[in-house]
Image (cartoon, rainbow, N blue to C red; front, side, top):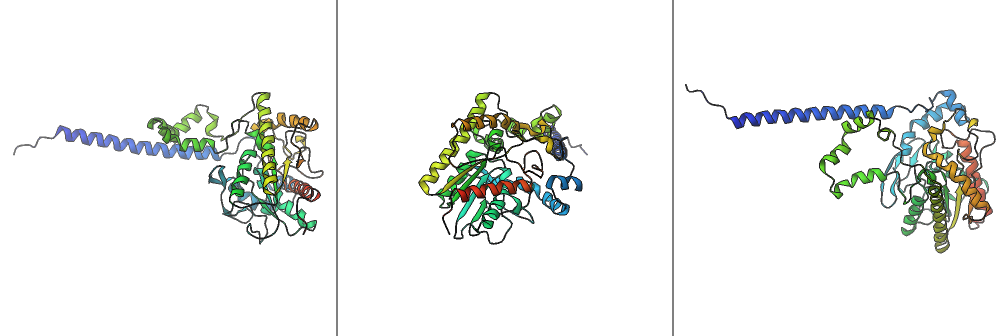
Amino acid sequence: MRRKQSNPLGRLFVSVSVILLCSVIGITIAETASNWALKMLRAKRPSFAISWTPDDIRKLYDTDDVARYEQIMSESWRQSDTVYSPFVEYKMTPYKGKHFNIAEDGYRSNGRAGQELAAAGPKVFVYGGSTAMGIGVADDETIPAQVEKALAAAGRDDVQVFNFAVVSYFSTQERIALERQLTAGVKPDVAVFVDGLNDFYYCTIPDVSAWNERLTQLTRARSRMPIALELSHRSSVVQLARHLGGDKSVMVREWGSFCETEADVDKVITRLDTNRRLIDAAGERLGFKTLFVQQPVPTYTYDNRKRPFPVKEEALGYHMNSARGYPKMALMKSEGRLWDKGLLWLAEEEPADANAYIDTVHYSPRFNRLIGERIASAILDGGMLAPR
């Protein structure tokens, strides 16, 4: 029989197919392995993190109920979980847990039943970043929850306080969040803004948010980025190579920026001051009161040696910007150059006989209670609520 001759094109096709298949398998394995490696590296605690032993918890929270705070910390990763929201770029993700609950309307529970945004009666809305939202504490231990408790203790148990604070928000996002609620027909009787820490953390004018980089990445395709460059930005292999090459941004998702010059610090102060003036103007026109809280920060007058555990300056990162901004704001306030209508200056506040911070910047339960009580007193003393 005559031997059948092989087709050169067929052999080429088979060879190319095998090479492509092997390449796809190889790339998939490499991407999977690199993605796993990155997750393991990102899951590692930084060198300055505290190991949460029962004794640590007792010292940080001034408590003997260690089990309660271990449960709270088991939900803590949820407290930084956000989803996209128009104009403000992101909001808190709705969630139901034991100690941490975010309603569909975007506010964190105060730990009691019956809280309802649509219910009749006077309402206080509290805006801010993670310190106001309450990182590391239970629903009933946040600043807004403590404001509500203090108002009730003073005879105003008819007032509902809503915690609209969001992780990493600063004054510009908070102003826009209020404006979105107002245009939707949702209006508070009193709007409280707890600010200072994050405004200086984001030392960038024009403003950018914590979601700026990820939104930029998502919209790159619309700007016709070359496909090879787009894939490289999404590749775990490339990211791992960048990390091994010394690129710290791969592991540490720091969204802030250092204030390089005094002019940068001045711009941040102007942003915060201007946002307060714009919010007050809206309140004047639309019929609600405003209270602006200059929050305590561990970089101004606080003696960090009081902490149960030492915190190095490097652990504070971009929060060190406030060490330059707060003294300037204090001077401007004394000279009458800072907006002071409805301003509650708590920059030097700290608990007298308790730990102030449970981590680098977030307040302890007792510090939240002190701040909440000061806010409640300012609301009552300022006659911001209509009589019952």
